[in-house]
Every structure is written in structure tokens, then in C-alpha cells.
Amino acid sequence: MSELLDRFELDEAVERQYRLGETAARAGRLREAAVHFRVAADQRLGDAAVQLARVLFALGERTEAEQWCLAAVADGFPEAEELIRENSEARQRFLEHAARITVGAPTFDWLPSGMPEHHVSPDVIAARTRALRTLDRRYGGMACHTSVLEHLAAVEPMIVVGDAPTWTAVAEVYELAGWTAFDSGQPGLALPHFAKALTLARQAENESLIASVLTRAGRMFLHHNAPDDALKAFQLGFVAAHNAWSDRRALDDPSQAIASLTTKVGTYGEGRARTLALTALARNHLALGDTAAAAEFAGEAVASARNLRSARADDHLRWLAQEARAAGASVLAEQVSARFARSG
Image 1 (spheres, rainbow, N blue to C red):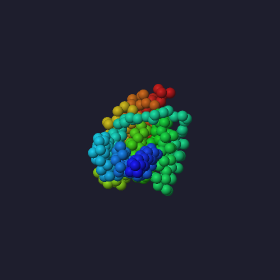
Image 2: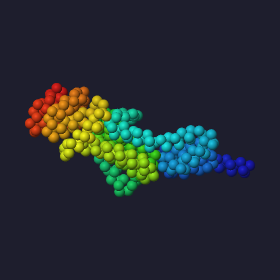
Image 3: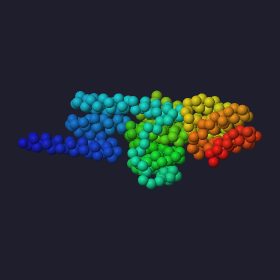
Image 4: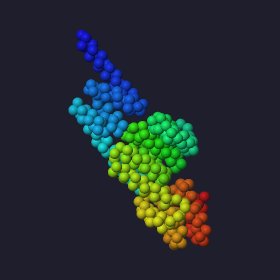
């Protein structure tokens, strides 16, 4: 009788550990969850080994996670094999996504589950993000990761009704969520945040932010002994940084900018990215005194912008018109200004 009672008490204690693991995992306290699930997995309780492996992968503890996956498969949980496969492919999927983002491909494949309850301006979002970033720098990611996630949950719905400044502001929150997840020892949770940051940064055509996200991802890969993946992330980040340079208003090196823009303009479909690239090509040719080529690209840019509603694209076209007038290219200036006369 005593043995039965002892066994019952042991089973109850193990099940309690499993439930505590579930609670900690839902709350994002993964190291705590791993401790509880490890007790339950040691006693071979249900799918505890699967749950433990999932948490360990998120913590970046790949070797131990794979060992528990093999134990789970031996205990009749074949889905654990899929966990190993998903983890090994996660960085590759991220880098493929990053490559599509870098060449300007549309990749918006998710939306928040609900609409915003009230409007939050990009400035308000950015101010809160800056405050959280200061906490991260001063006290570390573990001190503010939960607050970053709360901030993200509050502002993410704004992307449904937002514009480029809003997408940029929310992308910066996702970037910080990924960075603080990594600094909290949860690299497996960082990648989805970085991926969404890239998607929103591309939606906003913010090349500088794309470069920043990829640089952070590369640093995380280096920290977790994946130098080849880190190099790929850094290389893609360099391309994005170069794109940001070639798109900027100050035309310091028109010839080099033209070479870069000519390479990438063909990768864009119709839309803002193509309009911006064509406008930049026109401005740089104008800077070199090649009015004929500038007029050709300006015509393509105006045509590309026909159905586009983008303050950023309009600003770039207005800059082109101003520079054309300053250069005495009045026909080119009027060609571009007609875009605004037609649109009112």
C-alpha cells in the first residue's frame, strides 16, 4: 500500500512539473520551463520530451534538444523528428526570406489577428521603442524583453491601417523584439521577429532598416557558431546598405550610383521600389549632364508612379524637377511636374 501511495505521489508531482513547464513556456520564461519539462521528461511523462526539445531549440541548445527528440521518437512521438528538421532549416528559411527582401520582392505573408482599437502614431511608437532600446543597452535584453513584447502586441495591429512611417515604426519594434530575445538566450524566438521586421521594412522601402536587421541577425548567427550563415546575413545587409546609399538625396558619386541602380531596377515589379529606382537613375544622369538619359528615366518613373500613392515617391520626383530647373533642363522639369498637375 505504501509503495502504491508513493508512486501516486510521485506521478502527481511529475504531472505538476509538466503543468508548471507549460505555464512558464506560455509566459516566455523558457529557462524555467526547461527545468520543469526536464523533470517530467526524465520520468518519461507523455510528450514531455517533445515539449522540452521545443523549448531547448528556442534557447539555442541544439545538441540537448536533438537528444530529447530522439528519446521522444523512441517513446512513440514521431513528430519530434519534424522538430529537428524545422530547427535545421530555420536559418535557411530566414536567409531565403532575407534574399527576397533585399532584391525588393513582395513578401507580406501575414497580418495581425485583429484591427487596432485606437490610433497610435508612428512618433508615439518610435518614442516608446527608443525608451526600451535604452533599457536594453543599459541593463540587457532580459530586463526588457517582456516589455518589448507588450509594446509589440499593442502596436502591431497598426500595420493594417498604417503607411510607410507606421510600417517602419513597427518594424523597429520587431527588430528590438528579436534582438532582446537573442540577448535573453532565446535565439529560436528571435528569427521570426527579425523576419517580420524585414517584411515591414521592405513594405516601407526602408533600406537602412533592412541593413540594420540583417546585421543584428548576422551577429546572432556568429554568437551561436554559424559563421557561414552570419556571412550570408552580413553580405545581404551590405547590399541593403548600398541600396540605401544609392537612393539617398545627396548625389556624391553619380557614376557609382548609376551602376548600382541599373543592376537592381530590373529586379523590381511595378510599384514604389521601381519608381524610386527610376527617379534616382534620372537624377544621377542629370547630375552627370546627360539630359537625354535623365529624361528617358524620368518618363519611365512618371509612368511607373501613375497608380502610386506614395509621399516618398512624390518627394523624390519633386527633387528631380527642382534639380532639372536648376540645371536649365526646363523640358525635363515640366515632364515631371505634369505628374502633379494631373493628380491635383
